[in-house]
Structures are given as structure tokens and as C-alpha cells.
Amino acid sequence: MKTKTKKLPRDVWIVMPGLNEEKYVGSVLQKVSAYTPNIIFIDDGSSDATFSEAKKSISHVLRHRVNMGKGAALKTGCDYAFDELGANTVIMMDSDDQHNPAELQSFVKAFASSEAEIVFGTRRLSGDMPGFKRFFNQLASHLVQVLFQSPFIPDIPSGYKALNKKAYKKLRWNALGYQVEMEIACRVSKYRIPFTTITIDTIYHDHDKGMTILNTLDFLHNILWWRITL
Image 1 (cartoon, rainbow, N blue to C red):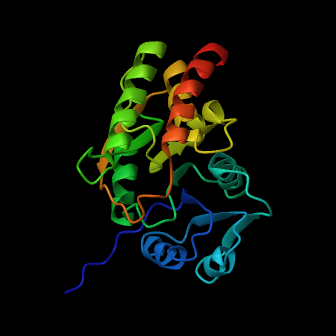
Image 2: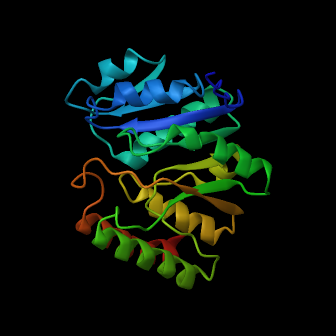
């Protein structure tokens, strides 16, 4: 007998940015739709058929006419969820099929069982993750911990995370690109926002996509900047 998928609460919305993800976006949105109809997709200036593919699956598809960056797309989606749709909680997901929708309920449970205002999805630092990413991943977490004298946040670059409306008011970031993940961690550390973590799957389809070594070095530079300016 097929087990019925448990739906997420009505005040939980998924925010999913994407750039040139026509290969995955349709199947990803269908998978997530099994858990909730509350999905906001932000097409961040794609030059392929990402926008039209997303529109086939869900109603709330927003569009940047030009590429503005992941941080800008996430902010567009979160603003829309909290200000226009009455969301209490947003779960952020990437649109390249590297996040397992079956883990969505784990974020909801983590909020219910703690005082956390943000839940970080942390991947196992296994052999599936490229070596340079494992190294800089751990280095970034230790730097944030030392510079902000704060609790350790593992796997800062992970894009699978959730935050409630209270946290978003404190965290609303300025970063436009991939630096958004680091700025969120620095703001959580600076403002002592209560958080918890859950373990998520490590899934890779395209090792050449996402953050590069240059992106990661830029992250480390920005940690120092945010330590001074936040």
C-alpha cells in the first residue's frame, strides 16, 4: 500500500531561485509539489526556457529580467512570501535537484522541537563533496566562529535552510550573489539569532556548477568585511 505524503503546514512556503535550470526545474517542482502547493520560484534572468518550464508546474513564478544573483533572488522570494502571502516560515531550496524534498518535514519538526528561528541544513562532508569545497567549507565555519565569538555553524554554503518571519526581519541581507549564505551566517552570529541544524543528503549532479574557488575566496574576504560593518 502506498504511503500518503504528509503535507507541510499552510503557513510554510518554499522559496527556490534558479538560473538556466530548464534541465531540472520541472521535475524538481513536481517533486516538491508532493509536499506542498506553497512554492515560489524566482527565475533570475535565465537565457533558456527555465521560466516557461516553471510556469507549467506552479502558479507563483517571479522573474528578474536580468541576472541579479542568488542573494537578490532569495530576497525577492522571501519578501513576496512574508509580505504578500502571509508566510510564517520560509524554506529555501536550490532548483538543481541537489536537495531532497523528503527532508522538508525535518525543517518543520526542527522548529517545533526547539526555540530556533533559523534551521541550517548541513551536508555530510563525505567523499561526494569535492575536496576544495570540504576544506573551505570547514575553514569558513571556523573563521565565523572565531571572529564573531559565536556558536559553530557547519556547512555555511549549503543552500537548504529555513527561517521564520522574526528571523528574516533581522537577517534581511544585502549580498546579491552566492555571498548570501555567508552573510546569513555572519548575521546569525553577530545578532545571536537562535538556530539549530539538521543533517541533509549530499547530492551532486554537476560538479562544475555552483561556487568556484574564486567564489569561496571572496566569501572569506567578506567574512572580515561583515565582522567590521555589521
